[in-house]
Image (cartoon, rainbow, N blue to C red):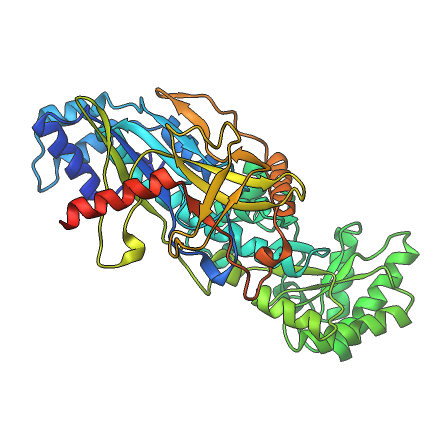
Length: 480
C-alpha cells in the first residue's frame, strides 16, 4: 500500500461532514476558516511559524485516488456511490492566505485563512493543523535554544527519538528555519539542502581492541572531518588523552582534528577539564562538542557554570518538544455564505479562551517609525481600511479593554500573504536560506523583553474596535 497520497490524512468526521453537505445540497456554499493557536508554548514570549511548504505541497497533490475511493466504499457509513464519484473529481479551487514561514507569531491571531466551498475547506482542516502545529512547535523550541546559545554551532540530532520518519525530516527543517546550523539526518539534508554533520558512535570504539586504535583508524579514513567521541570508557583518563595523541598524529600528516565530543557525565566539569588539557597540548583550535539530552534550560545552566563548549548536538528534547509536545492550534469557521454575501459566525464556550472572533480578518504588525520596533499586532476586518491608510489606531487589550492607547506614527506590515487564489498557487515558496534570513529579521523587530526565555513581556495582540464590537454583538445575540 502506497503512503504517498495524503488526501485521507484527515479525521473521519471531515468526510462525514462533506457527505452531509453533499447530501443536503450545500457543498458549494462558500465558507471562511482561520487557523490559529490560543496559548504560546513553553511559556515563551513568541512562536515561530512553520509548516507552509508542507501545506502547499499537500494542497497541490490533493486528489482522491482509486485506493482511497475503494477504502471509503468499505466504511460503515455506506456512503452513496454518487458521493464517491464526486470525490473522484475533487480538486482544491479555493483561496488561502498565510503568514510567511519564520515569522514571529502570537496567540489568537489568524495564521492561515481559507476561503473555499465548505466541501473543500472542511477537508483541509486536519492536515493543515497537523503540519502547522508540529512544525511551529519545533521551530519555536529551536528558536529558544538559539536564544541561549547565540554564537555557538547548533546541530539537530533528534531522528532516532522522533515520532516517525516524517516528524524527523520536517522537524529538522523547522529547526533550521529557527537558526540551527545542521542536522544529522541525511534525508532531511538531501530533501531540503540543510548542512549535515556527524561523528561516530560508541560502537566504533567498542568494536576495536583499544580506544587508540579506534581513534586512529577513524581519523585515517576521514582525516579532514575528525571529531572523536571521548567518553566510551573514561573521558579524562582515557578519551581526551587518546584524542590528543590522535590529534598529534594528524598534525604529522599535515591534518588537524576538528573537535572532541562529550556525551555523558558532568558536562560543565568535563568540558573545562578537557579544554585545559587540549590547550596545554597546544590544541587551542580543537573544539568541544556536547550532546546528551540537552535543551535550552540545560544549555543555559551549563553556560552559567562556565562550560567550555563550542557546539551543541540537541536531540530528544528538541525533536519531541519534550516539555510541551503539542501546540494546540485550532481551525475555526468565522464566516459563511448566504444569499446576500458572507455573514460572520461565532463559537461561544464555557471556557472564555475558546470563544472565537467572528468575521473575515487580516493581521497587521504595527511598527513604530521612530524605533523600528513592533508595538502590537492588529487584527482588523478585511473591509476596514484605517490601518492601510495610516490613520490613527486605537489599540486596546481584548481582555482588559480599558487599557488602551492611540498610535499615529507607524508602519503597518500585512502578515497574511495570498498563497492560493481560486485554486492556483500564486506564491513562490522561498528557499530555506531566505526563510532563515526572514526569521532573523523578524527577531530584530522586537524588544529583548519580548524575546527572553524567562518571564517574557506579553506582546499585545489587539482587535480593531469594529472587530471587537462585532464580536460583542454576536455574543449578545446568542446569549439572549
